Image (cartoon, rainbow, N blue to C red; front, side):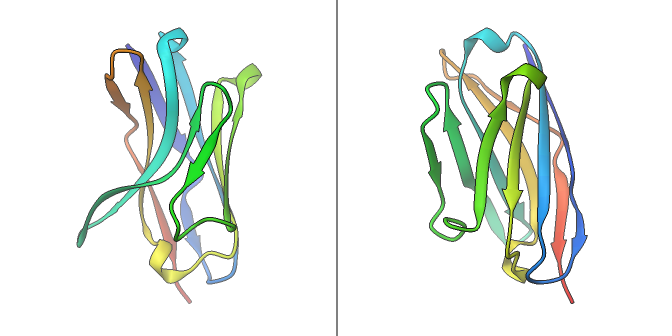
Length: 116
């Protein structure tokens, strides 16, 4: 079992920044990829960014160049630095981990609201 706890969401104005954190605990040795997803009431949950165990990253086209995903292995934490935020980035952001048998684990979600 893998446990994920997100933090760092909030209300910001367009153009500002936020950093999301996901603390990982439990059977982390089997995790092969971690990522951030987001969901709004009008859209299905979508992948924002992912980081693989070897360090490779990938991003949704809508956030590439503005968001950066990273890991702090010493702190068992995954981060999402979000810059130049736009109103369309407003969503509930979820931390995800997938292990080598394709079991998905999810955090509880954290709300990000971008509004003037």
